[in-house]
Image (cartoon, rainbow, N blue to C red):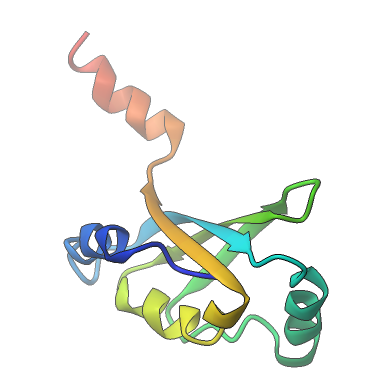
Amino acid sequence: MLISQADSIENIVSVKQGDSMLFMVVERFSKDKTKEIYRRFKEKGRMMPEGLKYLDSWVSANFEQCFQLMECDDPLLFQEWILQWQDLGEFEIVPVVPSKETAEVVAKFL
């Protein structure tokens, strides 16, 4: 698992601390690391720091990617979490907004 390049984390760090936000974490598993990832998860759990909340996840059919929906108010928590998994893949952290809320914002401009 891994984190995207510094660009992504710089965009996230601009978020004010204290405001809970949703993030889609796209994990790209390193080649042939799927079993090792699940073994570590079984032995140690998610290893998430307090304040980083896991909501749900989906794994691609070919085991190459995992999409995790998470919530937090401090993007630095992602760095702490990723350091424990970065040897097994890469991460992309994307701030997301629920579609309903986006539709409400866009409606003001229609």
